[in-house]
Image (cartoon, rainbow, N blue to C red; front, side):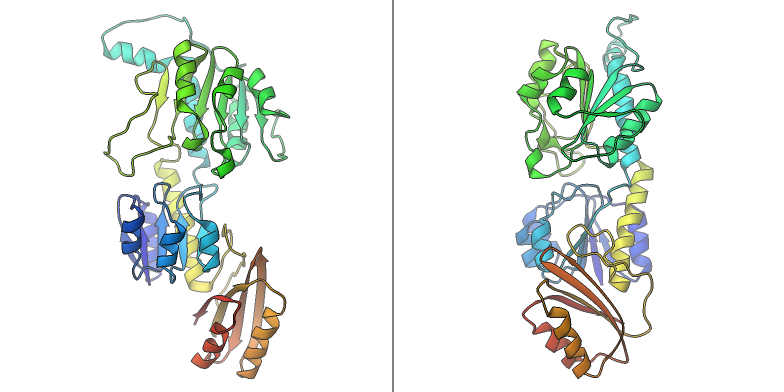
Length: 398
């Protein structure tokens, strides 16, 4: 079995997969569509981060691809529906880099409030500017968090612990932590917060979420941060409000168009503006987070290979399997229509296979049944199962 890991995935992932006997090809950068199609020849497991796009065309060209591991939070770079249609399981790391992102947000809020980037630039230019003008403590300021998921909610707790007042807005009904207060609308949050931080997910509906109307609604001399998705923000509108002084400072970690590899040229309309912090999509780029992500996602891929477990898969029915049977285990992904399980069990019975344990889970149009049988499983039985019109993917673990 072979795994292809792209974009400098942590060596912990290489170690875990290698211990399972999986041959690992680890590469430093992202691949475009044609390069990825060529590289996936003979590959069973693919590991990516945010720069590699796994399109329906890529998946169609790799029908035997067992799983894709997104070694990051987002999965919008993967065609999840196309992957599900051919039984390719997708995993991500929804929690592993949460703390790293939160710490960067807090550091940037303090830096912007104290105008540290401007002070630093002047010192390097030989100018001694010892002044309190425009510098503020963050204690007592109101932080507005847009998107109260794993990152937004943890930011809420940490910000409150260092003295900030926290309000948040989310399209879903979320439990407020600590003394945080939910806003009914985004406009309500923008009219009250003097620091706004975006933490929404990568769904297409969030494209262009923050533009001229939203920046104009923010309080004068407020601070803006985006460490979620580049396509969420209109950077030209942000620049206009920074130049006019309406927005006092900004920190941006994600961009609509980002280089695929380290060392490539980067351009942005936000460059060369005072009190603007630009970082190269490093919110989750700490050694601790990357090691934890490597361990978590590679562990999911390893468990899928070893036992068929799909716990925390983002596009497939989830089956949690804690042990491996002594006999064969049949892993069967199928269309979720009435009667499939009955037909499968009839085929097993007719072949003389004795079912020892069976687990079934469904999700949308797909079903996933894991069957442990006593004795051996012959090829004629598997051929019969593959011929069923509902069959999506079939694999046996011995």
